[in-house]
Amino acid sequence: MALILPEELTLIGRTPAGHEYGSSTRLAVAAGVIGELALHRRITIDRGYVFVTDPTPTTHLFLDPLLGKLIQRPSAISLTDCLRDQALLYEWWLNHLVRSGLLRPEAAGSPPGSTRYVPDPEVRDPVLTRLRYLLNGWAEQNPRTVALAGIVHGSGLGDDLIPFPADRAALAAFGQQDPIGRAIMAIHTEDRRSADAPAGGFFVFLSSAPGGC
Image (tube, rainbow, N blue to C red; front, side, top):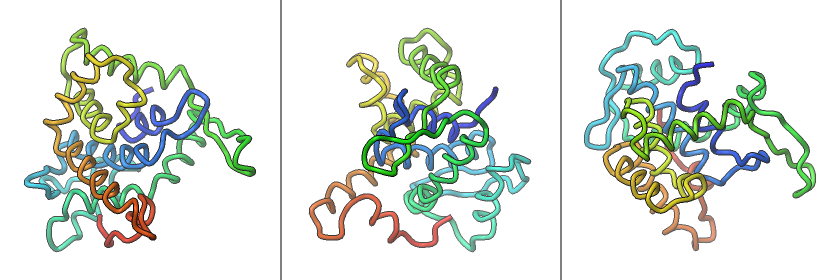
């Protein structure tokens, strides 16, 4: 089964037991949507802004809504605003993967009434294997896996997914070259600065974002 970046990132953004790694996952999935459009050569990112370079629909049901919104905008949008906007759709991706059978919802013990989403290991594990092969130089640097590495680093998911320091150093090298990864890191930095404010925190930060994409 060929997955697109946001689907892969939704899967690896969950522990094998189905718990979310944190707000990093939501940003990573948002970045995956934008990164996938870039891989399809529909958009380009320049100086922190997203530009449509080809308005032709991808014919992918889950990518063309964002492309359509970007086409309708009177001007380019900042990448950070687009990431914030897309991060608000994280639950949609969860439901999509549940319907696809790639996530299995189960009742979580704590807090009461919460749900964990257990990823299919036969689909999740190969994504991580592909990433590990890239970091160790065992596979060619194809654009899709390089984009995955940049997003994993920028979102902070590498801290949870990559156990070995040498692999993390290789991951950082990819992330520092990736504009989407760098934009996610900028959001994290701003979030940390506002963490001590009474209304601070990642989710408030997202909810205050403009209309975005």
